[in-house]
Amino acid sequence: MSSLNKAMIIGRLGQDPEVRYTQSNTAFANMSVATSEKYKDRNGELQETTEWHRVVVWGRLAEICQEYLKKGSLVYFEGPIQTREWEDKDGQKRYTTEIKALNMQMLDSRGGSGGSSAPAKNKKNAAAVEIDDQFDDMDDDLPF
Image 1 (cartoon, helix red, strand yellow):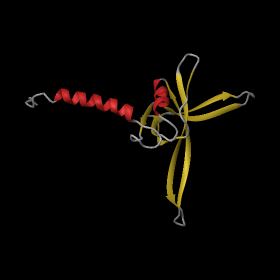
Image 2 (spheres, rainbow, N blue to C red):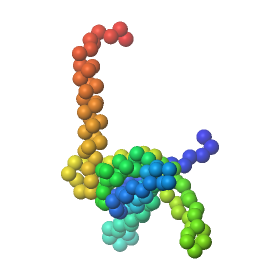
Image 3 (cartoon, rainbow, N blue to C red):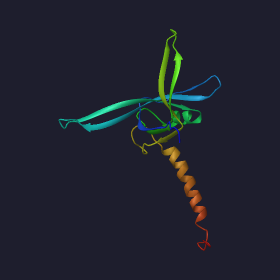
Image 4 (spheres, rainbow, N blue to C red):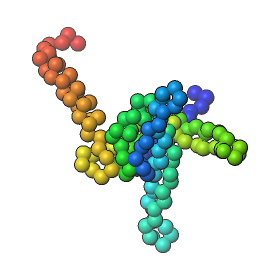
């Protein structure tokens, strides 16, 4: 393997996701995600540092984020880090580095602060139960 560009973060959203659309009607959402680290300093006092990460989500995943996530939601994002360049209205070159999220997992429990992943999990669990029920009637006399 010659290279790998992959970021994985778990953090809380800084604001509600807002979906916008490109001229070709592709959905996207830009989000800020906070990750925190707690540690004790030399004096033994508890310290906390917070890093903010820019995350961009495209397509149907952006619409799902808008539907199920809100400010404070605990979420996992995974994808490559990319740097984009553009010119502002004054003609100055600007750059931003962000995580282009290809995967997202809602981590809040039902009724927890900052969002719920219950709708997505319930659909998945219902399908799993349905599949499991189909295999309950199978014979255990398999030849291998």
